[in-house]
Every structure is written in C-alpha cells, then in structure tokens.
Image 1 (cartoon, rainbow, N blue to C red):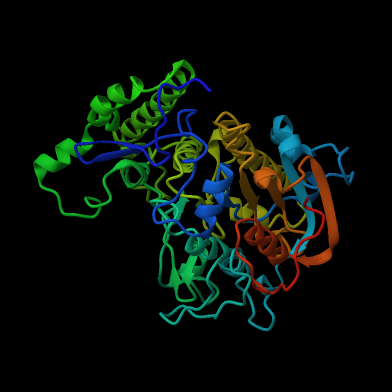
Image 2: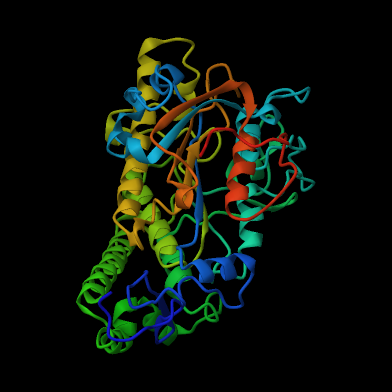
Length: 459
C-alpha cells in the first residue's frame, strides 16, 4: 500500500461553503474504512471488516417494453441479449436479467383504469394505491426509503431522488389518480412522496455545498460565491492533502477531481443554453440540458459521484414520469412514447417502442461503465452495488403487469452471482426481489408489499 500517512475515510475538502467528499484511497487504512459518525450496526460491521459499503439504486422506465425484444430466449449463464438489451453486452457478466416478476397491485383489482399511475406509484411500494386526485393520497413507504432510514446515520445524505421530467404533486394525471402517483417512485411515508430533483445544479450543490447553507436565502454576494467552482473553493485543502498521499493515491485523487470538474463544466454549459430550443410541449426550466440524453447522462454522473464518495448509499432515478409522452427526435422518433406504447400490434409502432427501449439501455450501459471504472478495494463501485432498472408495466398496449422488464446489475458486495438470465414462475412478486435486496443491507423484514418470500437463486 503506497501511502505516506493514514487518513480518515470521512476526510472531506472544505472551503468557502463547499464540501467535497473523497473517493476510497489507499491511504484510508482498513481500520478507518467506511466507519460512520455516529456509528450504527451497519457502519460498525463495515468498519470492522474494512469492506466497502453496499449501495442500492432503482431506475424507473416509463411505459413498459416490447418484451419479445427484451427477454432472452435462453435461461442460465449462456444466453444472448435480445435487441433491446444489446447495449448491455459489455456488462453481461455484471448483471441479471429477471423474467416472470409481477406487480399485482399495479392491476386495477376493482379500481378501474389508471394503470400508468398505478404502475409508477406501486413500483417501489408494492401496494394498492388509494384512487384519488385529491390530497388524501395513500401509497406506502417505498423500499428505497426503508433502506435510507436504516442507513440514515451512515452517510451525509440519507437518499437522493433524481429524474428528468417535472412532476406534479396534485391534480388528476391518470383516470382519477393523483399526479403524485405518476410523478414519484420514492415515498417517505404512505402520504409523503419524495419529490425528485431534475435540476443538475441543485443536485450538484446538494452533493458538494455546505448543508448548513443549502436552502438559505442568499444575498447577491453569496450567490456569486456559490457559482464559483467547487474545486476552486477547496484547492488549498486539496494541495495539502496531496502532500500526504503516495503516487497511486495522488493519481486517483487527480482523476476524481477532474471528474468533478467535468460535471461542473457540463452543469454550467446547461445553464448557459438557450431555453428557446426546448420543445414547446415540455416545460423544462432554464438550467436543464435541452437534449434528453445529455440530461440523463449528467444526472447519472451525479449519481455516480454521490455513491463513489459515500455521500449517499440510496438513489432513485426516473427516466420519465408514468405515461410519459416524450418524443425522442434524437433517435428519429417524433411521436409520443405513451401514444406509441398503445401500438395495437402495428409493427411500425412496435419497432419505435423497441428503439426507445434500446435507447434507454444505452444510457443505462453508460452508467454501468462509469460505475465499473471506480475502483474500491479489490473490486469496483458496481461490484459493491445493486442497481435495479425496470418498470411496473410490461406490455403497454394491454397494460400488463406480469413478466415485467427487470434488470439487476452489480454483485451486491459479493452476495449476488451475476451473468445469468433467471426465469421465475409467472406472477412471482417483484417485491420478493426487494426483500432480498433489503436482506443484503441488513434490513430484516417478514414481508414487503405483496410478498412474504425472498427471491430465490440470486446468490
């Protein structure tokens, strides 16, 4: 181990209202790795073992998928990724394709239409939503927030909720269901959704700004100082830290700081853009990249920074709201996604939906590549994560909620055997997977949502 002196895992760089957490360095000896302040059970175990913490992320896809282009024909280790999943080929050994899972509570069960709102609000809660467009919304605490509560004392931020499309917390968005259901997958309590953040600058400041300053009313001088580079603000401490590090750590620190600088530049570029370029059907505020792919990539890069620095271990991300009708002109699709999902077996529309699915998987693949590039101990950030990407609806044309499109990436700190297509009995609850994921972060529950059983064969 090449280091000059041992430093704490919780070392941060500070300056002028900026706080910059650090990635795992060799100089952070095994006795200090991942120790939390204050230390809970999970932090104590990690501090004892010296192993990296386990992160969980949940990524939501709107409007389901064309399942014949999504589901591998072969089961087990030797399987070929179908067209929609082909972008994941470089990471096939790092993921599981899971077939046969279902969300029964996304079905009407006597509540009539509203499948897109139900499939979104139920995605991480697993319960039947109260059908209302008023203030008396009711879902359940979502799996990510159960994890966040358990890990609350281990990180600076308990969780991070990200997305692309602005959401509403009231009004009717789907056949009598509140917009809160369509706009959120994370729920702190049954009546309190965790609103996602779509502004890269706000996320960046939440990650790297002094928490005591976040949310305060700042005067013009403070606002100007806030706009300065985070790296400029902490450069003095960064120089001092480099004097304590060996060659390998110095290189890793430099690479990390350059990654932060890159995100800063992209956030600034997004803010400098011309809002007139935004399509009129999307009310995208100033500061959000006009190109959808750029927006997604920027938000996912922020996700990687948040997890790599152990600023949070729980993240949710929405590629779009429930029933999103976004067009994708960057891939030649100008019709709305939701409209196309009701394809009525029109081959041209099916092809376009499959193309959207593949486009989303390209973006997901880019996330996995960046997570694999972050070294942690003997593995990578992806090895020490569970990253679920999927939807609460499969066939958007029929509003089906069985055989859901679900991919789980990451080895869960060594507790998951990846590189397989696992096919489960039809209508196996997706919530069984959530129980298995909660087990792996130390949360023991007899049931979650509509399941009382764990998902078999993950290890």
